Image 1: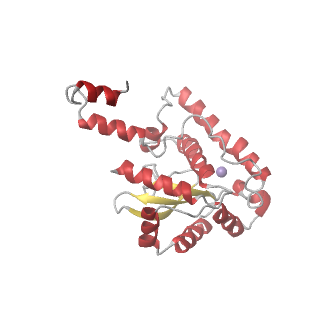
Image 2: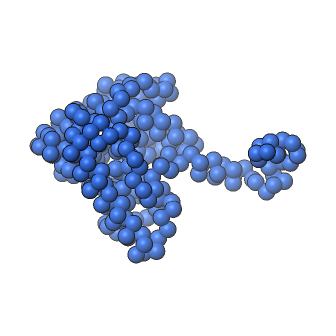
Image 3: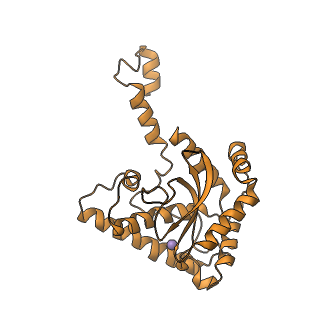
Length: 243
Ligand code: MN
């Protein structure tokens, strides 16, 4: 008998069990944290290393995933152990005050790449829910307009950094924002604090072996791979999360 059936069959109220609504709400929120997939492991890719070709080469993916991204996680792990910081809630960590650049770089580096891998897919599903589509129309005019704003922002990042499609919690609007180096929009130090749905890595290590200085071509290739289904899923999770 599961708990729900148990409650129904015994007629026990939730209050009688000491489960107030706030605790239940907290449990629900815990269960639906949009970033719960980010932990002290690298997520397996949804595609093979060569699965994004010809847009992103297998060589880039191999080095990017197994060297760069793995390096951020390794350094993060070492830092947390050295400082006796629990590693079981990385979301709480990234939302909290982060004083040291080392932690910004490596916690951010890990978070950013975990979102990045999932932002990409070789299956060009463009279908999104009505709610997400309506909000894109309301905030940008349409998907192609959003893609233009996103691409322009990515192109204009000076040096290394990221462009993000986010939900901004105060206005509840979708926004495009950029962050330098490995800053994540969830961090308190982010210039614009918001919940990232998808992101593009514009560090040279993400494209140089294939595109050299042609960042615009890489951004166009990213547009061909952007997993709108993942963006949609994240949108709904974030809307639920911020309540
Ligand atoms: Mn990268």
